Image (cartoon, rainbow, N blue to C red):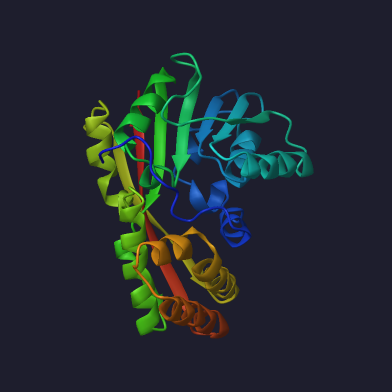
Amino acid sequence: MASEKATYSHGHHESVVRTHARRTVENSASFLIPHVQPHHHILDVGCGPGSITTGLAKLASEGQVIGCDAVQEVLVQAESLAREQNVSNVTFQKVDANALPFEDATFDITFCHQVLQHVGDPVAVLEEMRRVTKPGGVVAAREVDYKSFAFYPELEALDRWLAVYLEVARVNGAQPNAGRYLMQWAKQAGFDTKVVTFSWDTWLYQRDNAKDYGAAWADRSRYSGFATTAKKHGLASDAEIDEISKAWTELASRDDSFVVIPNGQILCPT
């Protein structure tokens, strides 16, 4: 992408952060768990409300974990979560991922989750993550691929939601299908792709999880950065936003609904 900066497409409306706070090491970073040792020092880039970060800190119980994000508001929530869970070996910092304020070779593992899709230059961020990781360590990333979404019921307004979201992300300078580009970006960032591990995993929302996810997106469709950007750039009308929100509400109301979200994952040895 052309620039280092991009606009975060989702924004930080309560409905967005609520969805992100449901992410855990187990449901969003299981591919990384076998590589975490109790003594490790770990950096979580773009940590959001800290739900994955605190999980990593529990695994690295004798080490230290730092979660960083560009938005102070979500860092306050992350700190609160760590206190609630009595996790004392984790700290949080406001940081620009394009210029990480850490010495070279500081961390055993540097990780990001759903970050590279939202930055203007994902290769530059991977290069920074590589720089601060020790030789013999791991840089890890997990990114969604929106174009591979599947959902039921098959509603025209949900197809429209996906089409609008793809355009919203691109208007904001992001790459909504980041999962499929991870190997390419890793190669451009200087990693040896002969030893980089790429894998594919999914989130599956069904039953109560589908109800929660659909309800969250019913709100996000109206009130988050998605709606603001879509209307600002003429990508969707107020009427279309209303129909999209209603479609998510319908999905949430049904017992046979589901949402499948594929994610690409990479482990890059340093």
